Every structure is written in structure tokens, then in C-alpha cells.
Amino acid sequence: MNLVIDAGNSQIYCGVFSQGEIKLRFRKAQSKSASSDELGVFFLSALRENGIDPKSITAVGCCSVVPEINHSLNNSIQKYFHVRPFFLEAGVKTGLQIQCKNPLEVGADRVADSIAACSRYPGKNIIVVDFGTATTIDAVKDGKKYCGGAILPGLNIAMRALEERTSMLPTVQIVNEVEVCGKTTTTSIQSGLYYGNLGAIREIVSRLHQKVFSNQDVTVIGTGGLARVFEDSGLFDALHPELVLEGVDIAMEMNK
Image (tube, helix red, strand yellow):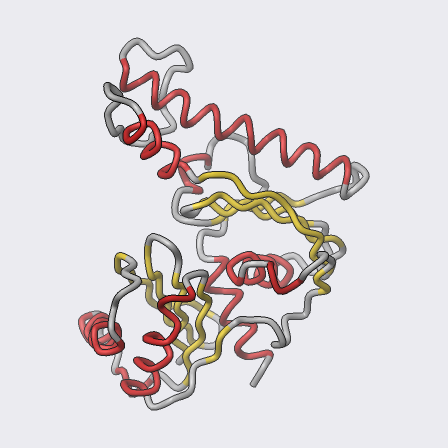
């Protein structure tokens, strides 16, 4: 079985795959100062508590957008799993043609999303909207040409910015069932967060559809932890919450 690790800015999200099918998901809060032992013990404990023998893990793949954690992550995997981890980074096989001015700047998470999306929808024009710490929107033509996209603050970042930069605005729960005209401060913030992000994403997707794909058919995919907030908005053609994990698993097999 393969252990796949997505080291994001807010969380470390993990999945166990067997023959391309995800069997287990687990996560922990991100800590840039975490030691290799802290990470290793966490991985082993999470596997054992969910009935998986760590010795059954024969390969480990990583996608990291937090360079500070990579050294500890690499050491923890070698020490506790006795394998050299695969990192999704520049120079590895992805099956994509990265059509950006500097391909090295493209985040590993965005590459992983695109790999998985292209695997699920071969040969298609695709837009992937990933709701993480930041919301990323990526365009892929013909199932292989990664064209770039857009990045905007994620829902939680926007909410924290309101809380930290104002004197009277509280933290709220992010919800989708909210009236656009809020009757309280809380519902007003919820309305702004939900409809503001929905409107921004719809505008970007619409312009990508027009400018990048010349109004040809495009499959819009939602992924990431907060994608389900917009599940009933009509924004997506499909929702696949674990695209990053799937993409790393595919790339790891591709590079064996």
C-alpha cells in the first residue's frame, strides 16, 4: 500500500492507497517546527489506530507547499518506514505540459490536482477549483497542457482577516445556507464570505472559459476541504475532495 502525504499551510492531510483506491484518510494540524520523530510517531499511530499495519506501507509520496517541513518529513519517512519518499517536485514525471513562464513556480498541490483531474477526465478541458488555505483555480487544456490559473485568499484567511483587522467583527462559522441580506453581524459576514467567494470564483471560471478555452466545453471540478460548502451552488460539474492525494499517488506510480 502507498501512504500519500499532502503537507499544506494549515494541515497535513494523509491518505492510504491500495491499487489506486483510497482506503484511509487522516490529518493533523500543520506545525513548521515539527520534528521528524513527532511526524513519524503520528503517522504510525494514525495507521495503527485505523487497523493498518505500518509494515504494509511499501511506498510514501509527498506533496508539500511548506519548505520548512520537508527535511523533517523526509527524515521521518526514512526512519519510520525505511523507504525513501517520493516528492512531487520539478524534474519528476507528471504527464503534464507546464505552459508557464517559470514551471518551477507552480505549486506541487496545483500540479497534483491537475494530474488527478486529467486521469479522471482524459483528453478533456478542465478547470480545477481547490479550496484550501488559499483558493487556487487552474486550467488544463486537452487533458495535458497546464496553462496556469488564479490564486485568491481562502475562506478561512478572509474570515481571520476580518477578525484580526477590525475591532468589532467576530469569527463565524462558514456556511452555505445563508440569506444574502444578513440581519445580524454574524449572518452579514457569512453572506459576504459565501457570496463574495462564489462570485469571484464564477467570474474567474467564466473568464478562463472564454480566454483560455475559447468557449469550448470545459469540465469544472471542485476539490479541497471547503469545496463542499459550494457543492449545491451549481459551480462545479463534479466534486472530488481528494484530488491532491490522488494526483501524488498517480505521479508516484508514474515515476517508479
